[in-house]
Length: 313
Image 1 (cartoon, rainbow, N blue to C red):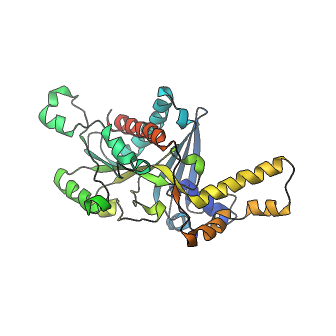
Image 2: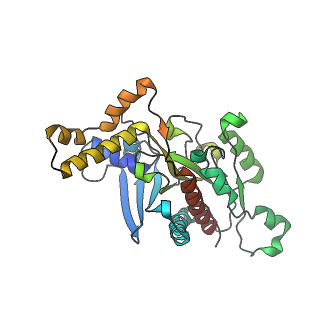
Image 3: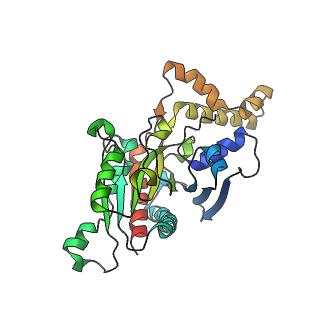
């Protein structure tokens, strides 16, 4: 079985294709690509059936990957353009699942005090909350305003309560029609760290990408549709080593210092080779870049704005 160790459906598709020498599309998957200007690429992967589910280990549904270049140096206009891409994709999913004024609960997973895991709580701070205003101050809002509430339930280590248990209690009491969950993800690509947004209409299994799986947050467990929005913030040390080795080989080839060994090494699965070396010594760390504070701030703005514009007309 392929060890994906990534939360991104697009990466899982690419890994599966490479492992099985597939040049066309994977049976059970459908993929579309779209460019928005020069800096934003949208890839929509649809898992059509059980074959697709087994191939990439993701449930049947839609997985939208938005890759954003130069987010480290993003200005206000760049953040706005990226958030508009999130809004567009999210609006399409919402229109297929609920009515224009149905209640939405936004949930920010993660730990505010651990920067790579702080995306969810930071997004919640910038969500436009309207549910209480519609109850107590209806005159200050348009009549077609959608009720939106939000919560950041914390993590099991500090609450002692599984997130799904907290959300079940909230759902039973306030009766939202849909949940939007925001969480930090793991990736198999260094360049995707805090520069990619994945939107899925299949819910989420928190911690799956870093081997710390919690109970799933899906329609099966919560009784209402769950849209998951995630941003990769960490990679494994083995991934960094494998990607670095790729760059090293490319440099040697450019300088005409390549040989048969280097050529063959580039075609092999270096990730698994390196992981086998690191894992027994507990050296296969989960790593995040030194600029993570600024990256999280930028991406939390992108996601929060995307949600705010998508949930209201």
